[in-house]
Amino acid sequence: MAHTELARSGYDEVQTFNLASTKLAFCQGDLDCWLKTPGRCKTEDAETEIVGAIHDADALVLLEPVTFGGHGYVLKRALDRVLCLLDPFMERRHSLTHHPPRYARPPSLFSVGWAREPDAAMTETFVDLNDANAVNLSAPGCGAVVLDAAHRDEWAGALGVMLEAPRTPGSGITGREPLREALRSAAAGADDLLPGRVERAALLVGSAKPKGTSASETLARALSARLGRAGVATEIHFATEFVHEDDGALEHAGAIAACDLFALVTPLYVDSFPALVTHALELVARHRGASRAPARFVTLVQCGFPEAEQNRTAVRIARHFAEQAGYAWSGALPLGGGGIVAPDAALDAPHGALRHVVRALDLAAPALAAGRALPPEAIPLMATAPMPDALYRRVGDLGARWQAHRNGLPQSALHDRPLDAPH
Image (cartoon, rainbow, N blue to C red; front, side, top):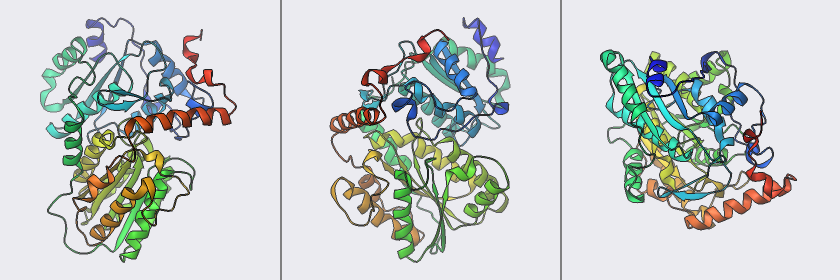
């Protein structure tokens, strides 16, 4: 049906990738596709052909089951690795910081989701995620639709409207304050949490970087230490435990699901969670579906852009996960400017640009240990900008240039467009 509607809308050539049967590596978050091999992922697999096809296309259409209101693991593996289609530098668009496109003609972006039953909240998240992705990718047009079994006779019409009348990405963004309010609303913990103290907590580090090298691990260890001082036994898991769906991954998912508190500490990838985190959540939800033992879920999401509002769709996805997996929602700590958290910076005492981060963790841990939601004051505290946005962008750009220099890369090469050459 999708092919038929694409042809009817003027797309006479369609290239299809079946990601479920395609072996793909996951994004390792090392930014080599910017600072070592600009415009190319260092991992050579089917993603090379996928990125080339996206570069040549007028439209990119994503088709998948809706997973917690967002993309599932299978598709997210491919989407995380389109970072090479962007430049490493920063600019302000639609009230927030984004990367400029590497190429002159990005494709429009459409997302088609499938759900067994209608769910207005998850559909809204799915549509908003597509819009945020389209803004980040500088797509000229965008659209998203969720199809369900109850409205099968409406599928063709919904697809046709989406393709023939694309929206302008970011057209609904009227300023920072509505985005800030959307973040605050999503991040607030539920009032009807489970009574009683937390005895055991599992923390999942969402970064795929080697241990000891990520800001997410620094934040997770800081939260773990505070929970420990509050009498909670903690265990730390890593996203790389979920590369495969084998006995090891299932065992780790079961261990997380067996704890009283599940805390996800993760970077933001393409407006949502990294593929490996999504895989972990899928497996944990599967375990929870079998037991449904009382437990709580909280997340700390940090992004490399200065604005905490960038985390708004990821936080909503986290809430959908909590609901589907039977967790009591304890809330979210959204951090902008995650680049200020160094892997070797112990978050023990308030200091410098990290003062607000430390104070938010100091407030959060005792409440979580006591079985309560995040204190309302901890959320805006964590979301406080570490420095003026323009200064952060400037420092980030200089950091990219310095890292390229250290890698022996000419500054002019940072803007390379390898896919524009004959291939």
